[in-house]
Image 1 (spheres, rainbow, N blue to C red):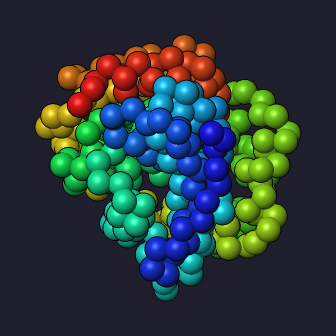
Image 2: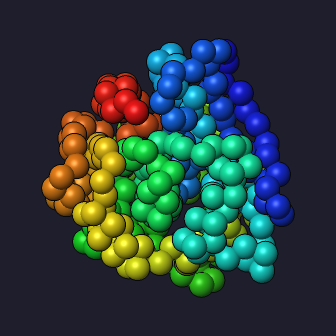
Length: 278
């Protein structure tokens, strides 16, 4: 089956998501793939077919405020980790996903890690790619400056910020057609920039990384950490902070592994999901 593009209304929020649903699914839980800042579900476009080929159902949503999902006003959505965690739970419940595996990447994907830590009975496996999992992780200036009042209001309205962030995170040139898809929300509406501003201002990274570091130390389910070695923002030492995890270093890969070199992501992710059978 082809990868479908779907919209689901959940309360006052609208989620856009890509869904790979094979005709015959294996017995393992569906896989939910969560993207990072300035990205969207499109970044998983080469991972979804690889999972579908192995008979996994795989769902990649655009976070609220990103891509084609709702971009609500801050008066209607707080853009804090807690608000995102609650919204993600409602989304998964609406889709009827009782048990899942989570794949999380990047600074916004870190909210997916927090969700897993708060719902260990639901999340059967957790795979992490270049996300802030240690209190040593800091939001890079290239992103942090976009949260500065007034200056950030202007910077986050520039569609070319996508090029600077996505390509700056790994040093690879992204195809112009792909960049056009990433830029589209900014070209379509100024709400994209306002949502990004609120995300950065409300990321609560210090509190989030403390929760993640402590929680992963106690995590009992299978855990994979795949790390792009040329990430300029999150060092290998951060990736290795969780000693009991299965750690894989991805050579020549940057902050956005699924965008930089999806083949290497698939090479480690698919066996991890297949090997840890329920």
